[in-house]
Amino acid sequence: MIKAVIFDMDGLMFDTERLYVQAWDYAGEQLGLGKVGYMNLKTLGMNITLARQVWMEEFGGLYDEEGINYHAKVFLKDYFSKNKLPVKPGLYALLEHLACRGYKLAVASSTYHDEVLDKLRHAGVDFYFHAVIGGDMVRHSKPDPEIYLAACRAVGEPPQNCMALEDSRNGILSAHRAGCLPVMVPDLWQPDEEIERILYKKADSLYDVLAIT
Image 1: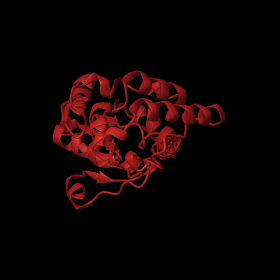
Image 2 (image 1 turned 30 degrees about the vertical axis):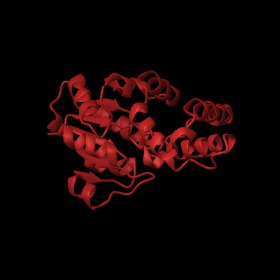
Image 3 (image 1 turned 180 degrees about the vertical axis):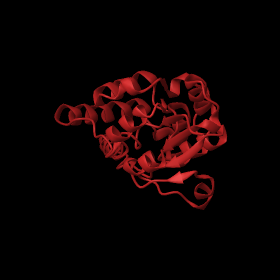
Image 4 (image 1 turned 90 degrees about the vertical axis):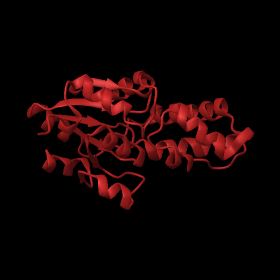
């Protein structure tokens, strides 16, 4: 019986992955690397440490982490000065649906904990969640199961009673390896055959998750 639902954040609750692609394209152009937004897809679901390794493999000595982060932040600051956080369709309806039915809710995101909380508050949904696990709170990044095991402990439920909502390959693998029930709501990446085999369900949008719960 499903008693808890664990949410990924970027690309699942908020339509931010496309925004990060634009930010990294901008940053890469500022540094003379050209558009590097494709690196977002290559690092989906990873924490900063693991993502750094992928960037180094791609660019070697040309990788300027400080410069990339600086210019990406300039882009994002300008964007958010003019726009609200892009919320995925169905998020508010799903959270209210789950809360009314007594599900325990948590977030398991590779993003740093404080940034996750900031986004949840910005969207006005922080009060729905019983626990928030950020990437800086675990040693190993998705696809390692550590973050989902931590989220299960935080809500006091065994993994088999926890449904995990994810949009990335690494996220689905992390949830599956933890023993959770992985549900994919695709964003930038569509599941391949390997991922299809381990999914509990696949939903086209967060609205479709309503029927699963």
